[in-house]
Image (cartoon, rainbow, N blue to C red; front, side):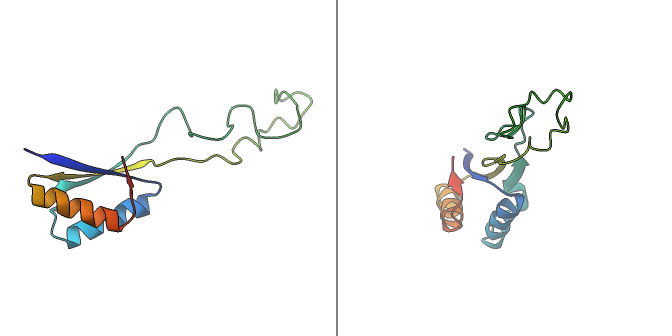
Length: 108
């Protein structure tokens, strides 16, 4: 039976480093999958619809700057890159977990 080890990363480079470490430990490339988890809903934190400005305008474009220049301030994305390792044995599961734990990925 196949089991899976899942980790989430904030950056693609973090996930790629983890993948490289797994490959160096003997995992096959087809066992390790990286997927970007972008959402059409936008960022998980930050005010991107009405702006972050303190100018109290309605941002309608009439009577104010109208350019929404403040809208993307302080937008933060959470863990958006998923790394999945497929393993067929308890030994493989333990090894993948140990490699990823060493790299301080967020377990999910």
